Length: 151
Ligand code: FES
Image (tube, rainbow, N blue to C red; front, side, top):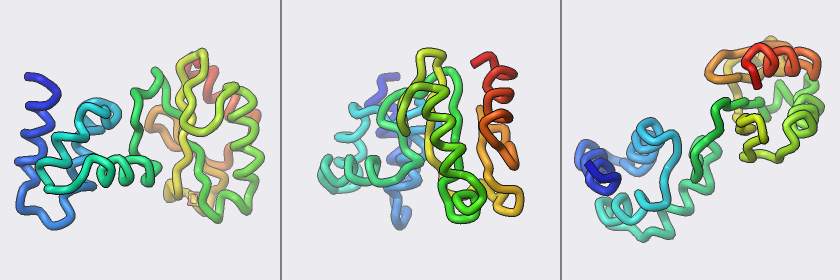
C-alpha cells in the first residue's frame, strides 16, 4: 500500500469526527514516526483545507515531526515546574552533549525534542529517553542515560 493510500485510509477512519486534523496527524505519525510532507496533500484534501493549513498545524505543535527521528528520541521538559528546577540548564547540557538544537538529530542518532510536561512536575526536571521517563535529571544523569542507551 502506498503512503498516499494508507494516509487516505487513516483520514477515512476519522471522517465525521469533529476536529479530525489532530487525531489524523497523530495517527500518521504513529505509523511513520513522523508526518511525511507527502501525506499533507491527502490530509488536506480529505478535510477540505489547504496544504498550508495542515503544514501550519504540523509546524505549530511540538508533538509533530516533519522528518524521521533518529534511533533514539530524547525529550526534555520545557514546562514551568521543570524550568524552575534546572530545566534550562538540562536543556543546554543536552544540546551541548548532542551538538544539536531542538528537533535536531545528533551524529549518534539521538533526536532532541522539547516537551511540555511529562507529568513528573514534583520530581523536576524531567526527561524521557526512548519512552522511558526520568526524574530529577541533571547533566550527569543525562550522560548516564545516553550511555546506557548506547547513544
Ligand atoms: S513541568 Fe516538567 S514534568 Fe511537568
